[in-house]
Image (tube, rainbow over all chains, first blue to last red; front, side):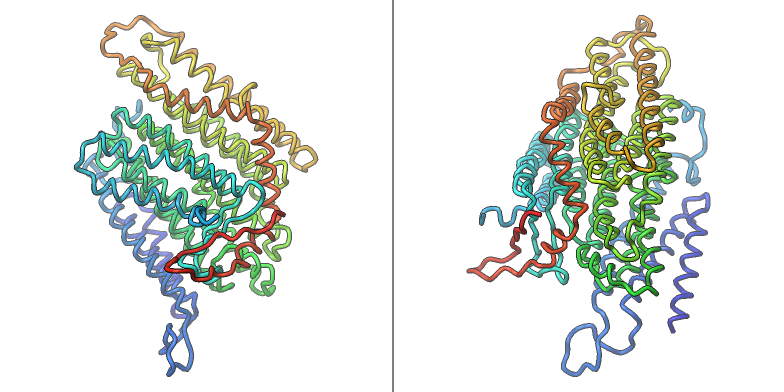
Length: 114
Length: 523
């Protein structure tokens, strides 16, 4: 189980890093998204893997899982969601303003002087 | 004391509420929005001064949100360093905002909302006592900075903005990985508690926490624009609007602040496997940043680009001081920090006025028309350049002098002296060259009507920032005493740890809620 989760996080991160290093904005956005998935999963399992035990106190519980990473990951998910939305809008704006979807924009003569 | 009970949270809450009110007022007349924004920014100054006075004797104010004490609850901690950063930020913000009120704020939507949220993020980052909230406040200030950076639009701005946003998103992901690892090993994120837990870490986990701590260092180095992670800065700062660039002069210092705060707690002399972790990295990298930043200053093709590279070089000087890791060196850094922030902001604001006065040529280093009010602009440029290059009698000189003196006896002494003095000379030559090109190698304007004469209102914020720089000289004694006391407090984190972890919940009284500042004893 631990090995499986570790592999999933590793593959997501590797894919995310690969895509984030591409030259077009769309793969970069996808790469950032994959990396945020990886880190959310990573944060979540930092409270250790536990199956079928509650995070909040109850009389019937045999054991507990750590509730804090769940709270942290909720915050992290919300933030990464907002950031992804922002970077998508920004890359669309860059596509419109620069006339292409390359992360550096296409060189134009006027850029050399600006 | 009761009236001051909620004081530590006010610098966080005030800009947040101002931002929300401004959002509600988005359709109100611009004058009203400006008034609210300026009033909120001005109110931060007395707040910061009051906080500074109440922590000046070495006490720490610990504010437990919702009366949940550390390490289970979230705490805000005001110590000398936090109060110092708050005061620097609030003074800078007022002058940046005053410049923006001259019309730049009307070039796009929601300038004032974003400006207040930026202050909310900055103040929160300085006050929080917990690593995860540091992440949250970083995200708040970054998201606001994305909006501010792009304010006004334009191709160059969007292009630079895209790089800035993407690299900071990668940085945030790495921050979370580091935070997750530290939590997984120690089970806490409160910085004081982390400090205690890390000192007693079993040896088999040492490598894990070391890699997490270095990952965290990488993230802070990215925010601070330390070599080799500074490449995003020059384009972003050179292409954004002047008041935003001026406000961003404090942004790189947030990275430097975080390095100082986190590593003074986590990697002090007694911190187990993390003890003195950064000693091998910080000072050499800072020296390289300083040298390379100064090469950028020489090679710049426009004034704003030059100002941006000067920011890179200044962060090199600042982190060099922090990297030397002695009371005197950190004190030199803390004295230098407000100086370089105000001077860089003044240069960005002045560059905007110069750029407007040169018509289509803007701030490019080419021989141009004679500027209207050239004497006034030139005079201000001369003073700003003196301040930035670290010439006496201005405060840059005192800061660098304190740094050079503190470096004596360190194994890096020849390097520090060599690089700091050489880069000082180079910056002086580069700025003299820019000034003579902009102001002396001119021809009579063909079309004087196209050149915009700088108004006194536009130059007043620049003059105001220069007065602050002058104030750092006039009150150099008390300021450097305060900086030394701050550095001493940072290098003895036990007091901070005791104040945070020893805080008792406040007894209920009437319908009162919220936290209570608990005064520790002076170290």
